[in-house]
Amino acid sequence: MNTTARLTQFEIFRLLLMFFIVVWHSIVHGMDMSCNRFPLFDSSDPANALNFVSTSALTSITAVAVNCYVIMTGYFHD
Image (cartoon, rainbow, N blue to C red; front, side, top):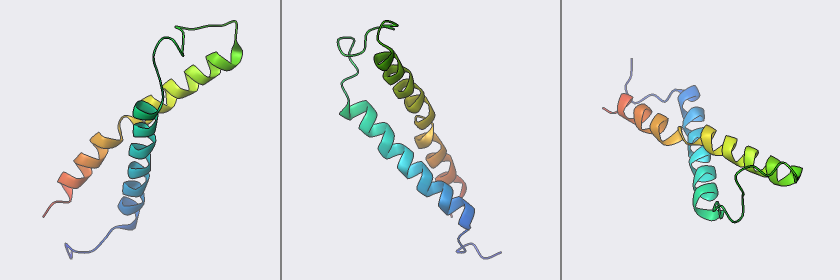
């Protein structure tokens, strides 16, 4: 097998991981996640609770992107 050949599915996965890294950085460094903006869990305001839950879920999903990117880079390193 030619070691310089690119595998399409891994390149697409790498692009997705890059997008996840950008999303994670924009959430963590671009949003004010302090307790003043997002109380612990305010069930009286459904929009606030939905924002908190969706932001936390998106952060959890995208947090693994750097680890996957490093593992994939190490695997394909010559």
